[in-house]
Image (tube, rainbow, N blue to C red; front, top):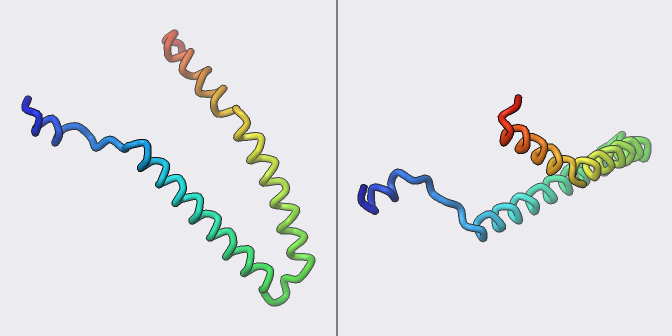
Length: 90
């Protein structure tokens, strides 16, 4: 197979910097959408302090679950799965 044919057959590989730029862009977009949503809720007619309190309470639960899920549980699960795959056990 010639080099040109290999280039056409192999999938395009993403460089490290392209991955970093993609992650930065997605995080900025997520933060902007969250800001817009929060501003909408705080300025909505009839929502008031009670509604903001409910949102804040829900956010505290979300923040706790996010912290628990990102402290190493995904790494531990992937390690256990890869060990089972290496041993060829279901």
